[in-house]
Image (cartoon, rainbow, N blue to C red; front, top):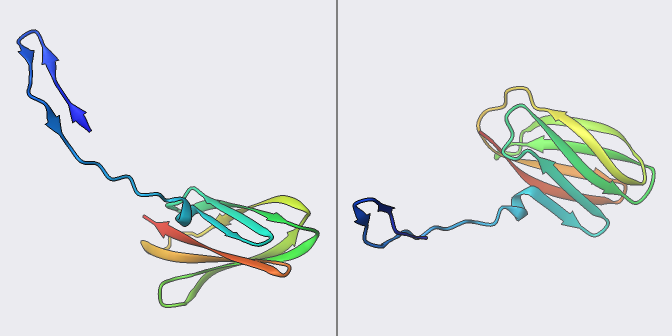
Length: 116
């Protein structure tokens, strides 16, 4: 980013600041053959919404594990063909990085989830 300040007294010298904007798409979206899933908001505070697709009427299983593999949340239900939305309530989990595992029928995927 390049910046020049101006006011009634004149212009400042040119200042340059390097800015890096990492791509977070890989953290938010999990895509495998036959399953598309999106978690928002991410980072999570207490609640989040998971949107995923299903190729037909199937059972789904959603589990959340911490970095040592302990299951901290699990939800199951029935998905319909097309886009499905599930409200997830995590309560007050410890800050950190978690993995959300989604299985729907024969397809599964993972989403990296951050709690701030």
